[in-house]
Length: 253
Ligand code: ADP
Ligand code: MG
Image: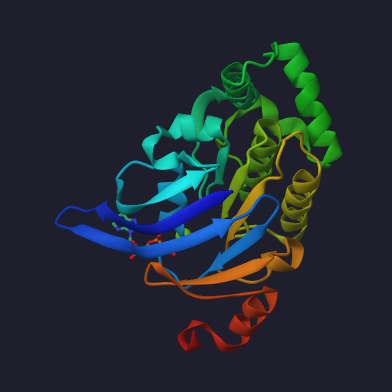
C-alpha cells in the first residue's frame, strides 16, 4: 500500500520559502489507479517530485510510505530501488550516454539490490527487444544518446520502456499525455495497461496518473479521481468526476 499522509511541502526560491502542498492525503492500494487533476500551479508536479526526492523541495510535515517503508527517509536512487517510478512531464536529455547502456545499468542496479541475476549487454538486448516487440515500439532510438533529440513521442515511449524493464510497484505519470499525438497516447496507455496486468511483482502495482485533461483517462481508466486545488485535495470521486470537470471547469470544484 502506498500512503501519503498530511504532507506539507515547500520550495526554496530566491527570496522565500514558498509553501505548495498544504496537508495532502492519499492512499493507493495495490492494483488501484488513481488520477489527480487540477488547475495549473495547484501542486501536481510538486507532489510527483517530492515522492521521488527531487532536489530543492522540502517536506515540512507528514509522511509517505510504501508498504510501511518510509520513503522520505530514502535517497532518490533508494526510492527507485524500492519500486517508485516517475515518468516526467519533461524527460531530461543526457548527451553522450547511450540509451540502452543507461537502461541496462538501471536494470542491473535494481537486480543487484534485489539479489537477482544481472544481465550482460547481449542478454539485456534480447530482453529489451522482446519488450519493444510486445509493445510495437520501434527500437531504433535505443542506440542513441539518452533522450537527446528525441521527439516528444520517443521520450515517452522510452520512459515506458524503462517502466517495463524496472517493474516498479508505484508508477507516477506526470502529464504523460502532454505533447503526445493520439497514436503515441494509445501506445503509452496500452503499455501501462499491459504492465498493470503482466508483471512479476508479488503485489500488483499502484498507479498515480497526473493529468490536466480527462482525455488520457479514456485510455487509462482510474478507480478514483482527485482534484488538487492549492496544494490540497479539494474533491474526490470516481471517473465521472473527471468528465463533470471537463464540462464545468475547475472553478466550481
Ligand atoms: P502543477 O504541476 O499543478 O501545474 P507545480 O507543482 O508545478 O504545479 O507548481 C505549483 C506551484 O509551485 C506553482 O505556483 C509553481 O510556480 C510553484 N513552484 C513549483 N516549483 C517551483 C520552483 N522550483 N521554484 C519556484 N516555484 C515553484
Ligand atoms: Mg505540472
